[in-house]
Length: 540
Image (tube, rainbow, N blue to C red; front, side):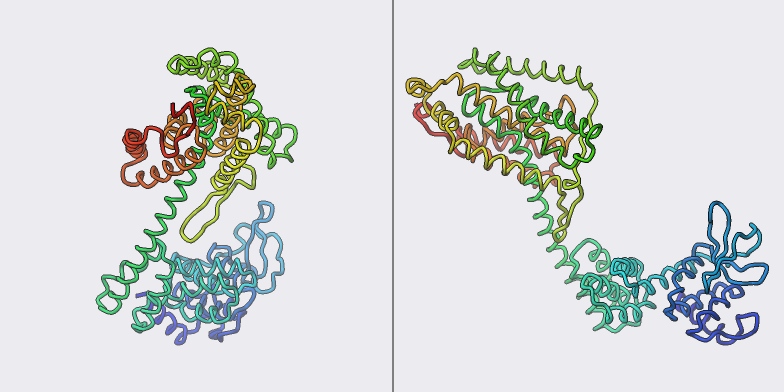
């Protein structure tokens, strides 16, 4: 019906005069075509729109956009075609051909050229065709994508011509897809052309391509239906692969969070044998330190906001580490060898820390902003990767690497390992085991503070922040092997990836339950976890 209506409109234009002077504008005569608009019918205006666009005149886009928006008028005084714009609350008229200003006009000093929805669609298509020749590649890309989203077989030739002249690779790709979709909408297109168009669309391998090609599977043309069906199968296989890759990324992202939350606990629980139920609150202190630092920077040094996390990280380490040392010296050191009493005591400390934070900062969530370098996302194929998650993964691996160096290459690390393997022998060798215990607890607490800095970028900063990660942290440590850093790394990423692969089928809560049950069964077979710590005291 659309093609018939356009054919009738063109026929009418050829048979009847559409200007006041009974003169038919010649294609390419931009001024005559614009001058014919006021007296034309809707069907005639639709044909004129296509002819105006075909002139490739630089003024065509402004005129057609003004027509679609209802801003193309004729002045009552001299019948000139003008574009009416709001200037300071008053209507000002500008000549559609020359841009000359007529100044302010009365509210009823002009008549708008009427348009309907069909005309607006025709104008949008014509403007899109004109924009395909815009000098800015971004505008051309936008026009090509708009042509793809609203395919019109009548635009196929114009799109193909723009494709032949295009040099930018991204725009060429978008144009080729727009041409292909226009061909698929054209019932008169040949079978080879439609099959070639199917291949072009299928190369996208995304949900949009699937939506375009799936209806063609029911095509009465057997060859087209078979080609579309094969393309749909290829797209679905590709999407499954990308979905698996996306789940792996989500798992690595969750694993990096679990690693940061658990790595400090691996030191205190694995090295010292202390079940520290206040570990989550040490993570919370790191997050609130980040909030406090950002609050000061926002009010006093706004230019340093992008550096706020780099400033907050060492401060969070010191704050949480100092609180950890205080907990060990004031409470934990009197309870070594009594794990249940240590658990109860540190749980009481966790309640005290939560209430202290509530009293100082209030019970509500606090906003911690993302620096510019942690904002936004980018795509790899059909995967979307956010910068904040990517930087948290990098940060977690960096903390892990630094901790390995501390444990392997520094005197305090050597002493920690000595106390882990045989506390009595270490004491007899002159190592101050009490001091090592305090420093070990402080190191684990400081790393928990660093975890809070990272978690502030992806989670709500509230007094209950740490409670969300304490159980998962213990699971990671026990599964990986208490006291083994490599086990903590493997456990964190294994649990993270397993969770993300189970969630689409079982839901977030049931996925965690399944993982927990699996870990319990695993611990029944390997009580020391994936990587067991070896030493005289342990083996004894």
